Image 1 (cartoon, rainbow, N blue to C red):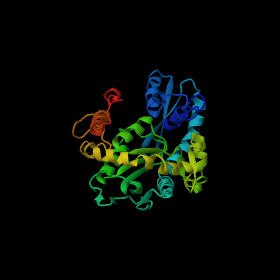
Image 2: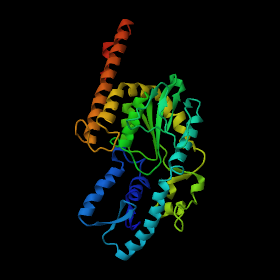
Image 3: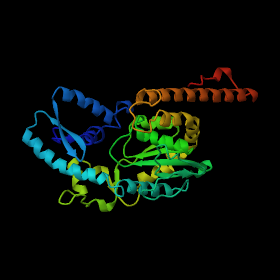
Image 4: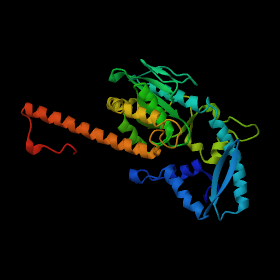
Length: 354
């Protein structure tokens, strides 16, 4: 805050969680993520060490923060300029062809460069409703941007959502359950493509039979660089620079190596295992997404009345227990087969948990 004078939430998250953070020398469990920032700001506001200013765009009020000791005139000058930049940025991210559809197009080009995948096709603004012999229920949430089949696993289906904003999605978010619910309806493996993701989400998606993929930067078309969404105001590039977001954007019209890499590496190598787990937990996911309604913006489960966090944590505990039991049964089968083949040594036996 001392360096930036006035900061918006995602601007603060960027400088605390992303820029210059010593990821390589820090254990995964000690990484600083956006929810830590949200928690840390509360006592600073309560103690009046940090003050809040608001700007209203349309019917939405956005919060900015600054150190209490910063002179009011300095805050006013910086906030006035940032408000103009922020208005341009908000206008830009609400332009589907520039932000949403273009990122989907880039990721679609990336997946079709690999011979392991077949796409059902992509068209900006067209949501995919059917995949193979299955269809989405029109009365339920379900957003699918990309879909197709994984050839090495005999045409196992997949669905993907592309998130091209600055928000980091957690396992409790409705966007995650919207994807999981759609994938469960279509009997497909879910893939979430987003700029950044918390470490917890990678673990969560692996357990439930899906993937999350970091694109690292926002994806915008080359022509958006000098676009002026509001006349007589900042260009997109200048607005991004003012907010500190410019270096987090790829202005591209073709995919980069990091967009192509997942489709030739982790996704295809672990796809069969993911598909098996997705099938294993399909009924649980359908229940949580549509009976508890976590695929909507409800704050509590529609059936249980419990918080989203409680529902997700219980599901994860049950899923881990089911996977441990599955591993135990597999080890029993292997051990029995070794006995039948005369290739079993009691002294060499290890606990299946290890």
